[in-house]
Length: 171
Image 1 (cartoon, rainbow, N blue to C red):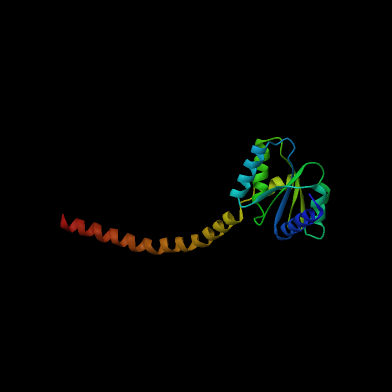
Image 2: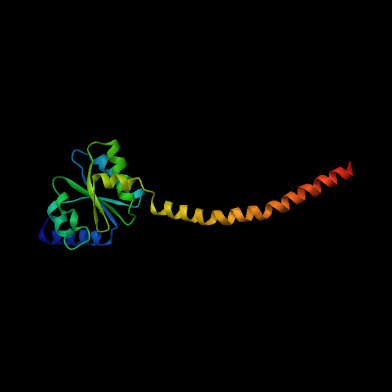
């Protein structure tokens, strides 16, 4: 890799760190190509990304970003998972790490807050942004549905009473 390629990579990673809402730092030592490919597919399905990094270039790219607190984690064979969804990279990385001991979650960051391994695992258990939106919409719609049910109940009861009287008179 020549100097211009390294500069382009640092610039690209700096843009990634500038736009992502969360980053998870992992050690991937011993993972096979097929396992990394599987992890990347899972990340892509969750609308996240997984990238093997060169530590020195990653440290340069982190400088001046909101994820600068992650600098000490870049030791050894590191890779990053990142996304605009704050939960997706943590969820996929933690789930994959449970099934494969070769992937180790070191820590991460959510916006400007640095997270340790335990906090990343806690973040992974949270519902995604879309799930949270669906829950809020459900909560907002529930009272309207209940009110409609309550308003319809007396009319339904009256209709049943009239139906019973009509059946009684017909008999």
